[in-house]
Length: 506
Image (cartoon, rainbow, N blue to C red; front, side, top):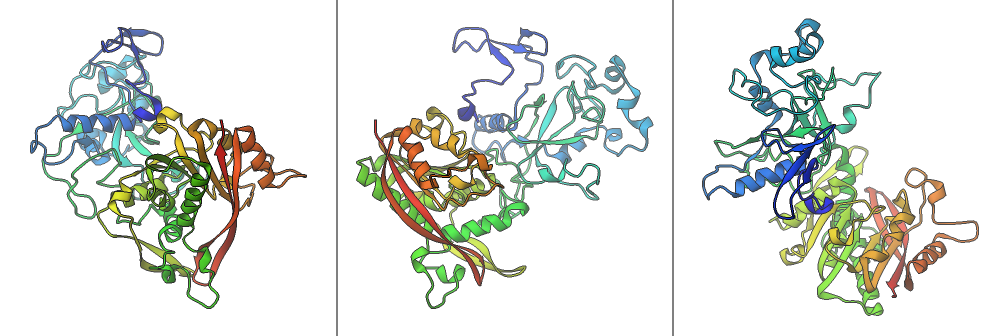
């Protein structure tokens, strides 16, 4: 997060002294004031977990039995006084409806409901009966948990899209409310809200130092905490290799089969063996990488230990690892966090195989299909990040320019394909190559029709060449590249993508 946003200090801090002096003021709602170090700090989830990692690193070896981390929702409930743990029995027991102004501060001991126009020192109110300050109010507290439903949860027909779309493993919980939380939008003591981890919501944190070793749901000791959210609770981050969250299981498995299940070693498990099977269309990610190698050599660009490649729309990483066979560093950039999480699990695993399942018929699935994991040396040259192809990061954020860029079957799935193409020139080295593969299957559900790369007089290949030439690229390669995607045991998509290679000419 710090690299992505070039963040040097928390968002509401303002530098006051010379660089390196670490002198700051604090931007409040109405003015910048001298830094009140006794106030809670406003950070997002990434920054909160970065602090716990740093704090853990300051401990001497053996001092901690488990990594420091944020509180869980269950722990936050235990920090509260007993009267604040039980569901409301009536409106008469809701402080929000019975206290106003400074009476809330006096009677409930919390900076909530706009009692004040800013945070207050964390010890401004007395500790509660359990000895903890600021369990409620002042600043929201990031929790270690992803947002999930509680027992008895039901979708109300009048408000069907508030909670359930966020049961996706990508929204982290905040608890306790803040000084600016009003009514049932946080001042109610039982609010539990969900935000993506990069959001700021007048949110701080408290951290936990476990007194006993902690295990994930596989029963393994947790050795490190990298802000991966909920080694303790999150189903996706602690699942076995090849397993994704509920919403993305089908798609993740489909892409695992495409990226790791069509080699000579296991193709019969994912593409039914039969007379006339189009084996020339198997292992599309590897063949895509080989086409980029071919074009890079033709363009006179760099390849080898000092070269860099970018795989835009890398999905679960098959082509990224294939590119790392010849490029020194390869970055996989993907919009789907579920895909990036899966690629990172493969990158970091000690197992020889990635495991997935494939559909057979109807709801019947075949489990325990195995694809070989790339060598540790190859995987060490890769990294994966969540990113938007239509809003490519800066060169500095990406770590420099690239000698080769691969976009395999992504172009016609972008909302703004031109925004992506127009951002390529600034991230590619001179003579570097951009390899675009696409079947040009434009659909309104992905790309508004006015953004399709075609016209009455030109097909997509012609429009693409014109756009890239305006960005300083020369087309050096054009060929058809088939692929197969399994739908079930007896139905497959046979796609013929068009591969076009463009070399950047200064």
